[in-house]
Amino acid sequence: MEKEIQKIITDTNLQHIAIIMDGNRRWAKEKGLPTALGHKKGVEALKATLRACNDFGVKYLTVYAFSTENWNRKQEEVDFLMNLVAVTLTNELAEMHKENVQIHFIGDLTRLSASLQKILANAVETTKNNTGVILQIALNYGSRDEITHAVREITRSGISPEKITPDTISKYLYTANVPDPDILVRTGGEQRISNYLLWQIAYSEIIIRNEFWPEFDKNLLSECIQEFGKRQRRYGK
Image (cartoon, rainbow, N blue to C red; front, top):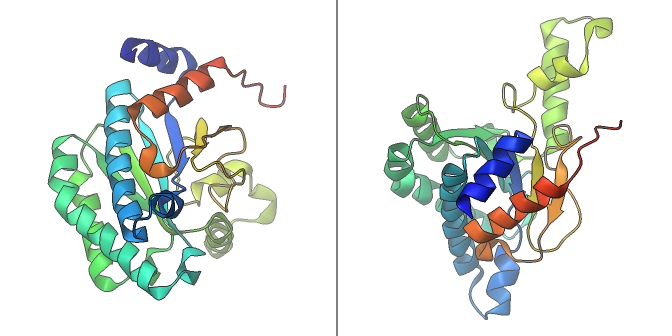
């Protein structure tokens, strides 16, 4: 099976998978468990997915961890999620570094606490020379916010309006120098984009899975890649 998936990736030039990790809370609720356990289980699913990407030869994985809208959740849950990010990166960084993962963060990180920003910066610095899977974690990320930020930076740079092209905008996004996603996967069955990578997914193949994110694993990722292999990407032609 693994060789079959690797062949699909090679034949289709699949480089980048983006995931909306949806369903932690619903998974926990269905099982009568605290929401916190759903989020913790979601971390385990991310670790399994990251390893699968490494096994299959997927170069880029971008995951939606915390959106600009998530601040509207109960403060107790927001605090838990921020702490979970900090604890996970602290505890798992050595292993991810050993597995040659390169870590990036996209989003407005200035709203995060100084202590968390320090942890994020250390993860980036520690893994910056790694050559394995590039993991982009979207934190305090919203695509409209990202595009607004890009427009402001383009304006500040003094580029004249007639010289602004789609490539110009791409270079000012948080994801500059990273190819656009080939696949956008959303777990949990919801059929919406939720303000995620709106510019970058213009021609991505969208795959909706009914499984909640804590249930996601190597087998489900392989099914997504197999589905991608059946698609015809026409780019409007």
